[in-house]
Length: 431
Image 1 (cartoon, one colour):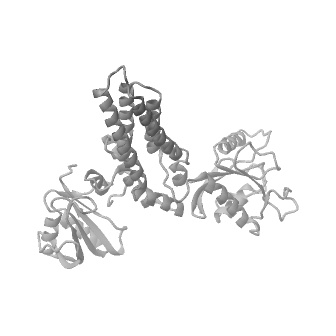
Image 2 (image 1 turned 90 degrees about the horizontal axis):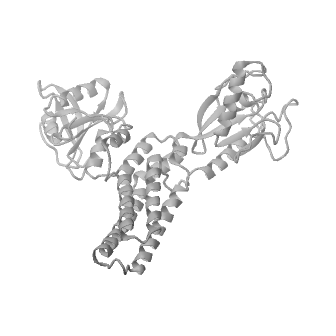
């Protein structure tokens, strides 16, 4: 793979479709268009053209052609788009014709976005935000990804970076011109105060829930003794028969996980084996052990057992799951009364779950950071904290350098090929 190659790929949905968009990016992009259309249309203006095979002159399709000269393009280099008819045969024929041009090849996964990063059209955080935006399935995921892709986080990082650079310059001046026995304590306090302010801003971001909660979904575990209605309630919540329902105690032996969106928030609901103290069934005992482990790792627990007997968990919702049945477990008015059969109380239960979730997730008007970003932010905060703990200018200079390196790694100014492969490998081929 060479960054000097011209690449192409289908960037719209898989055919058949009404329209298919093939993107071509690289130094030969406009030559490819001229070879297919017999002319080079004016940039940034849709032009109707007949595409012909370069070897035989056979008509392939009529297309709308758009040219975007670099560096003011999505990839930062010459970019062309062919808007063709979206039949499978048409797409295959046009792709085959493009591949006949020298130094032109099919793009790899994420290669268009990687070139945009390499050419300064977006930084690493914006690229990750774009990947999250493309995979977003809920409204909260979309809003968070839009903020990251839009550069909100990168703007904050750049402001910190510029301030750290100024502090580093001030520190270097002290090292060059100050007498070692007469350190300017006023400058020292100024640097320390500035480091403390940036550190507080970073720690405020780190105090927010991680992006993985938003992306992967909050884990809601249904717990309780056998035959308390967990599987029936799960089916009602996800509105399909995801779990087997039976009057036989111990029917559910293993965990059943079902993803679902409620009020624009992603959840993973987990039905568990009924918990009881004694069982001679080895398989059921294994299921009970897994149930207890699942509840320990849950974000929210729906407890269907006797009131007050559930696990010690900060987010537990007491549910009376068979409120319309004479055999149902009775609970106080503090519990949510539901009937999975009639649907009574189900809306109230979903509202209660969503209300708790909104407290556990980053607000929709704020960006959330992933594990890579959290680690580097923590490194930066630690370095800034170390700056405040010393009067030695050499140590201050080194700590500021470490803080700057962490900020550069956040945006991709400092990076490894392995990291870039991991980030851009998440994209589809046409992106």
